Image 1 (tube, protein in one colour):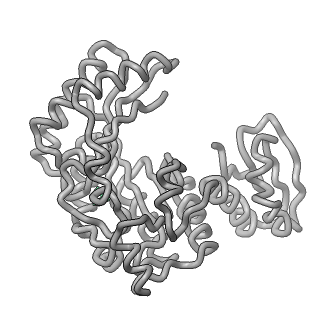
Image 2 (image 1 turned 45 degrees about the horizontal axis):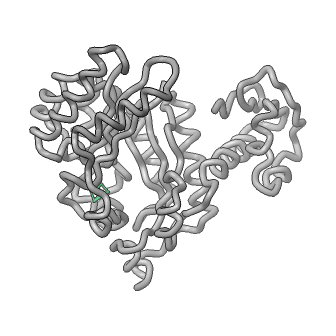
Image 3 (image 1 turned 120 degrees about the vertical axis):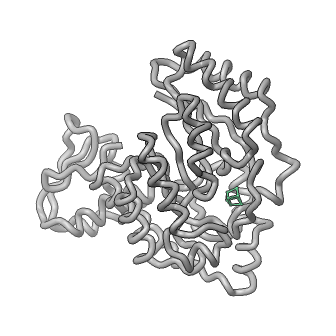
Length: 321
Ligand code: SF4
């Protein structure tokens, strides 16, 4: 099961979040025409095996691009549902771009998953990050989506202005309570040309320590894992463009790997001493980069067990992907 991603950049977004550089690169990246979107889908279908694929409209504000264009994209995707080539449609949008009217339109198509860029549920963090929506907007949108039996995804960022370990954990717990079934965890990266870059330079934004951000991401991951919320991604996709534009914050080439290995370390610290069994594919995650985790396992026996699909600490699965 895979997503066929179609990126709809900034189109429809009237906001200018402190961390977002889409406005400064608008003009360089333009949304695909419907014809171009069709070509992307056809090309992807040639290489995909199995079934259950979804067409995914990413970019952050899909339901704000105007109903006519939105329905053109949705009609295109629905053709492939009708031909049984894909199972459904996934999209991402802002919480304040979800209304009953919008959901009535989406209800005409096989929209199975909606991801909201919530980023934080702390009012101060939302305000300092210029998100332009409140916690109540996220709660209302989440409720409307869940009521329509659409799978709810909530994305969070860690280490935004005003954020703390406690605030991030509270956001993660609230995501669970709001009925999220999927999430993405994005430690904040400061990009060139953003308000956050200016705030970093003038000292009004002081990011949390890198290690604290990793601990925070790992503990949020554990909350999601223990409550059956699927973590679809940790950290931005590592592209050349990201590498060129990242000037601060929590940029690391192997951020996901670092967070996963921290999840194992912190879970081991929380549990009573005993045994860690792991599939050998997970050895690097168990030991961490440069074997940094090993000193934390003094009270554990480490046992390779390739019958497992992940890592097991004291008979408790902490990681299966
Ligand atoms: S809502 Fe999304 S697309 Fe719009 S400015 Fe914020 S991050 Fe960028």
